[in-house]
Amino acid sequence: MPFYAVDDERENFEQYLAGAPLPPGRNREWAANIRAATAAKRYMGRVHIIEHALTPYLQFEIDWYYAVNAAAGEDIRFILRKDAPNVTYRDTWLFDDRDVVDLSYDAQGRLLYINKNDDPKRLVEARIAWTEFYRRSFPLADLLAMIRGRDLAVTEFAGAHGA
Image 1 (cartoon, rainbow, N blue to C red):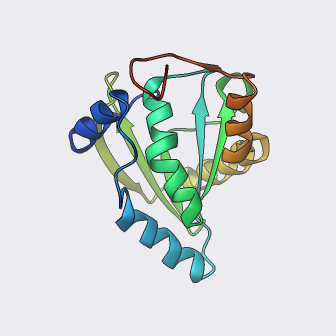
Image 2 (image 1 turned 120 degrees about the vertical axis):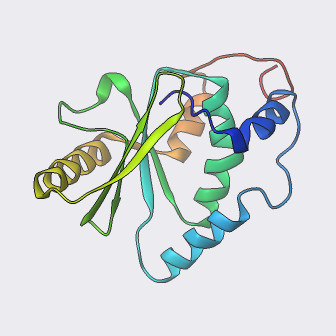
């Protein structure tokens, strides 16, 4: 999704757009979950499908979520939409390579539902999608290098982060 319409983060997004710095303790609880999982030798990671131009919302996610999560141990990766594999996929969480949770959003980025999917066929699809997306993806550090090197378009917006 290019944008998630989450009421709980609307104020933070507006502050980000206005140029506010990352608030102290931002995403602290989730980062603690990541550290606990990785300390227990469990993998936490994601692959985010992106366009060649980053939206202000994705910039917000990178600066106020992904940077914190990556520092805590999450493997955050990206794939350009043009490089996405030709496999069945949707917005999915795959836990321990055995539990599939599918998420559905409307066109405005509002969460419609979260569904734990116990269908063995869906598990196979999710595993194939994860493997193929991961194989073609690149890490957050590479994305940041692409931004710095201007190899990736960044949509300008008002505020210190986009000017």
